[in-house]
Length: 232
Ligand SMILES: CC(C)c1onc(-c2c(Cl)cccc2Cl)c1COc1ccc2cc(-c3cccc(C(=O)O)c3)sc2c1
Image (cartoon, rainbow, N blue to C red; front, side, top):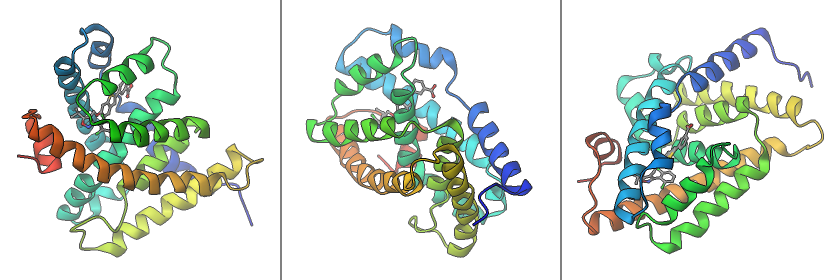
């Protein structure tokens, strides 16, 4: 069938990629990853700061997804709450696969491994990071896959399923064409990308348990994280 994108699809992709690039973690926050000393406490505090900054970045990105702000207000909140962890796994995965020049990758891995996360979550988490790295996603694919994750119609408490489905479907159509254009040799590349979304669901269940175990050891989160993750 016709593979090249329509004018509308190219405009939609540009809007999403621009929003994705515009909203990055402020460099001074990301730089702290390299500077602060290592201890489980310090690592946890840093990761909490990074996560909080990342949630703010995600909210701004989401508001720029064409059509998102015309959704029902409560559905907008339900989509954000339901997708934050998955979108942040995607984002932190891109940090690893980007092989940050200034050693962020190594340092981020070190800090995650020593932040009080129980070992049983380390393996699935780093397997995911590896599987994302192997896909060699281009930036457009990362941005649209993040938008698709946010626009998941079956998140808890979403009322107008159809409205979200329509938005997500538009994104899926763009992503499918993009995958064919960017990875012409790999027939199933698009299917492999969508397979990562299933892995993200599993990780977000693990994450809920991570939160419980952190809470048990009396770890504190920021007000924004408490609100978005319903902790405390
Ligand atoms: C509260 C805290 C302890 C926490 O709880 N669960 C998780 C989590 C962990 Cl561990 C793993 C995956 C998902 C979550 Cl949600 C976290 C830490 O979450 C994050 C989330 C995003 C990012 C992006 C970063 C990053 C670095 C350099 C550069 C950039 C960049 O975008 O340029 C981004 S670090 C970072 C840390």
